[in-house]
Length: 420
Image 1 (cartoon, rainbow, N blue to C red):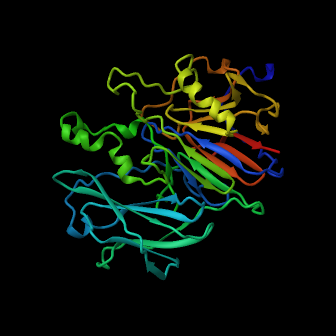
Image 2 (cartoon, one colour):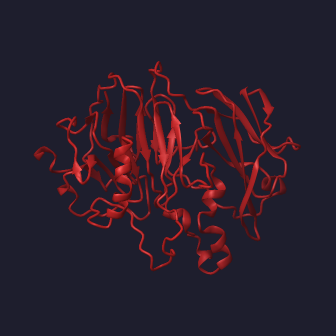
Image 3 (cartoon, rainbow, N blue to C red):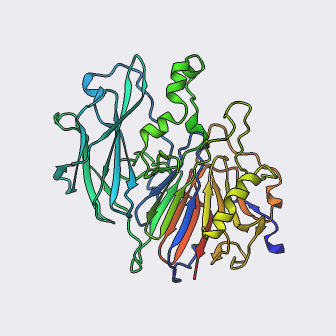
């Protein structure tokens, strides 16, 4: 136990690539409990089958500004903000395409096909949602869910008006999720809290989002003076209008799960109000865990930990805190070190979930100040100095997690999980 008594603060350099992607494994179950924080939207993002790389410059956050000059009639109805999300009860058989315009287009639709030059008008109707309007413009969001697709296949699509050929988007493409097949030896990679360099990729790569506290709030200065605007921009209005996750039973985008290959992801909301709960006002205390939770975490821990252990969840990923942390497997407040290598970079058949905080993709609020984190026996490493994203690489034999420095792409932390 003594060798697990202290955590290390990151001092990144060149890390060796683990060579344990060879042992047989059935499938992983990853619980992605990702809490949105700061200016950074949490994302689980499937990004091809090769390691993440940047050819010329590291990724940078690129925020889309609201219109500040009058738009022409053509610009008001132009499809914009196109993004994707996996859909369907069976992995790889569905995809939701979402887009927006500043004026309602009553015949919004999409075309899809396996060739960019041979697209067919989809029979599915596009759902129209609007939550915002002012004197300058309104915002309408459209969602159309394609079904009956072939897993692990490439499709091309475009969106726009069914009757106006001048009001359509360029042709984009997406890849459907892969089904869990035992004979599939290839890997795929996920980016968590991802930015996309010089060109955003949301029209090509699915955004799988998880709600956090900031989606309930309005940060525009106008909300301080306009109750009407506060009503339009608060209470998850924008989040639930702009995104469409594969949830059911009236859960909106707050609770849902999805599968990709050997991994099952569960998105857990920390923001749901239940019947009988205290009214959420300025006097209601809301807790978010950090590196030194002391006692305030116990209600949350008591509610969730037995379920995580019962269903053998492999990893719990969260955000909110502006830092990165990786823990040992933990059960009932104790690190479970069986199968953990001496350098804590390999977890062989862990007996409890591994907890990861990945909340340092970038924030004007800076990093989280930690106190006495190094003394925690369960904390392998923490980093509240560097900004970065996390990547998850998976095949049928192993799961590899890396924390990547945003400035230069260097690997700050890496570990591998395998199971017999």
